[in-house]
Image (cartoon, rainbow, N blue to C red; front, top):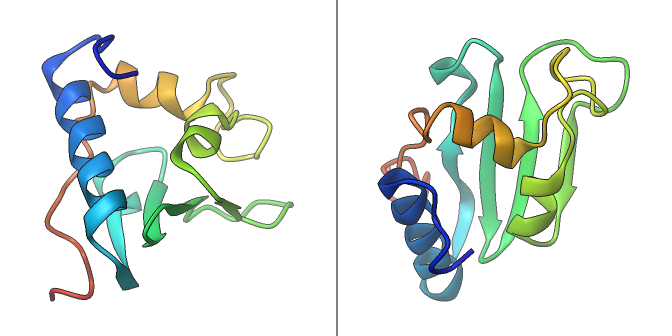
Length: 112
């Protein structure tokens, strides 16, 4: 992704997450996207250094949390296949369509 950003907000997202993955351990979790900030009720939580939990606050038949070992796997996850939304989009496409408007960088629970 580096150098191929489609917007300024995308650049900020990737550079901020990269810096945190490399330098900021989180025991309690770093909530980057909250289900309270979008109509699809999607959330993204960074765990430890570079592991991620993608999920929804909706009731879904499958296990609602999708735990991955890297950001790329979370971004490539198909939200329809996970049962989170009815549109066939990846999490990256979903973020881009919103221009990252639901991403916040002040919710590391270790700091609260």
